[in-house]
Image 1 (cartoon, rainbow, N blue to C red):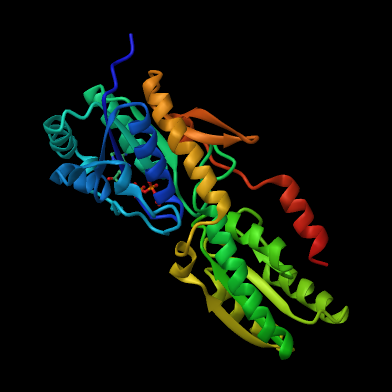
Image 2: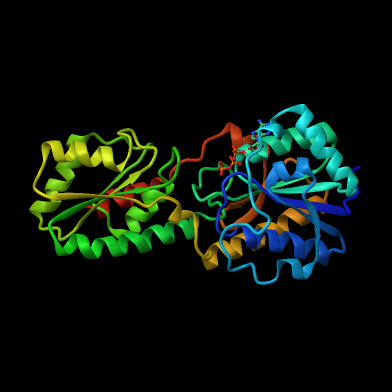
Length: 327
Ligand code: ATP
């Protein structure tokens, strides 16, 4: 028989992502809607170990749906990786008689959640929040849409100056060891090339692509470079290209943490809201050890294990059209 769920805690862990607040709000409001108590754990697992836990009410989450970041803050915790750290965290939950947990974060946070849930027999549900979209088991993660929109806005501005001069811009975007942000932004901005870890491209191939664009009188040239690609980043790619091909003036822009900020898009707010409600309903129905995932338009429950055993892959169709359209 599944355990009775009366007191639910929610935390955000790992890197922050726009839309996490909308997910917190949805967890808090749906828990209260179903007549349960709900608690916010500040600073992820670190705060759980230290007992930084506050009961939330419907007004604790007023006016946060439009805010980037996470009001309950996020952290990484070395201590939570140890049995002693997790024991301490459990003692803190016990103090508040918390019987279940919702973790908003990435695969690392879910790995920790799974171990913790098993050690102390606490049901845990995950909600995928990361701008990188690098989680298996969901078509999109919370934050990815906002982040790519920020990237596209920036590149649109860079393009204005690129097309006013004979300039070649190398724009580095986040994504860790995946090219999700780079590829999507590449299509949305009409970049001449997208350098990604999943699709290795030699400098010679890149120069041929740029050259082809020059011959067909392309007016501006933007090369998007995912931070994890093989050559080492935008500055390295630019230097290697310029060593062999100096028809242009090369400029490098590293977008950096700007990509994590900003008010979440409608898509992220709605996705986070759907996932937050689903997470609470899953707990109440006896679920544990699963993440909410968006699969073909529906919110499904995906085992934690598959989120860290399997790798998410770039969408083949998006890859294909990116190649067709960059000529
Ligand atoms: P992001 O995608 O932003 O990096 P993440 O959830 O993958 O998010 P991690 O830093 O990998 O981020 O994990 C967050 C926290 O989860 C860690 O600081 C640690 O406290 C906990 N954690 C990760 N892996 C484990 C593990 N194997 N055992 C226990 N705790 C873990």
